[in-house]
Amino acid sequence: MTWDDDALLGGPDVVVPVSSAGDPPLFLDYCETGVSPIPAAVRRVHEHAHELNHYPRGLCDHAVRAIAAAHGVSESQVLLTNGVDEATDLVLLEARALTCVTPGFVGYWERANALDVAATYLPLTAEWELPEQWWHAAHPGSAFVVAQPNNPTGSSFGSATWLDEALAMFSLVVVDETYRLVADAPMRSCVHREEENLLTFISLSKAYGLAGVRVGALVGSPPIIERLARRKRFYSIDNLALHAVIGALEDPDAVASATAAVKRLRPAYARAIANAVGLFAEARMTDCTFVLGRVHERIGAHRLVTELAAGGVMVSDCAISGMPGWLRVGVTDAATITKLTRALQRCELALGADQPRRSYGPTTAPARRRSVRGAC
Ligand SMILES: Cc1ncc(COP(=O)(O)O)c(C=O)c1O
Image 1: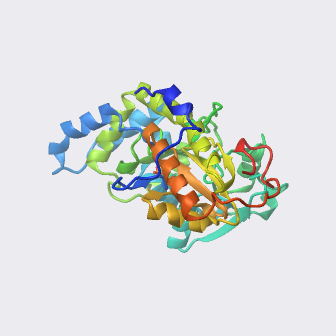
Image 2: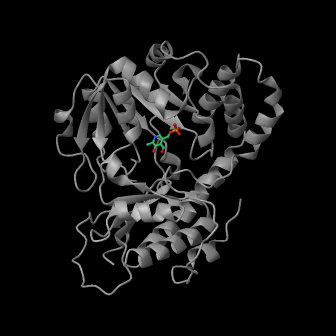
């Protein structure tokens, strides 16, 4: 896959016509990448479509072998799950209580609610870090489930010791590495650590472009993997999904090129937000498959999300994940940047953001993060 970087990145000053009548909706709310499914995955699904009359006998083992080999762990350390939801369910059924951070990924809280499992929410600091002595606030018998990089903050904790502290405190710690491969600086995976109470969640949705097949994996020590496996449903992952995973893992170069594309596109998305006149106080780069915009209070995040949706552009209001005032915009493909820019221009007009106004004070947001532009 190749991108025209010059055309893509040259353009914050390009004037885009303010009309998109008839465009299909743009879904930028679930952080899917614009990466096409890996061709080897599609090919394998086609080749095996005639096997729909069979249970996926033997295929799970094949997929486990492929995931174990790709991550350099043993097969007894890998448990395939029906996405992050089944992974969270298995963890919560084991630990019976959840500790998670806010702002944080809503998927964990939703599963805890669905299973009637008590949840403790640990508020992050204004800089989206764990607070000092954070582990004292935790429910020690619970599972601590956290994404690194985190969604929706798009950042990782700065502390070098947080994971050791968590492992010493909690009965189970789950590090969700869904976005690890798209982080700008290389991040070491937790899969090679040896603590028995550590699990790592691996998603195939973003870097492998397989969000539609709902497959992920928990990686951990064999005893915990075996305990969790006892609670699994009968073949929770279907035949075709397993073939897609096996096919995708046959082509590691495609994954590398997909993650490189996300990293290349992300700054242009952040710039599209930064250049939307009068809508945002701040635009942020992240280490995830999305960028962030802090909406001017006079505009309001909810109003802007609603206005964008009315124009066929779906983005996420981070209020639901503990970050009111912020929008999360998925990084998909190059063509979408122009459409997003156009949609934001329509909102500038519709919400009166383009009108002259008195100036507002500097942003109070954390300075450490990579702001693309301050107050605008
Ligand atoms: C932190 C985090 N974990 C997991 C997922 C999704 O995982 P999957 O699609 O593999 O179930 C997401 C998707 O947005 C996410 O943000």
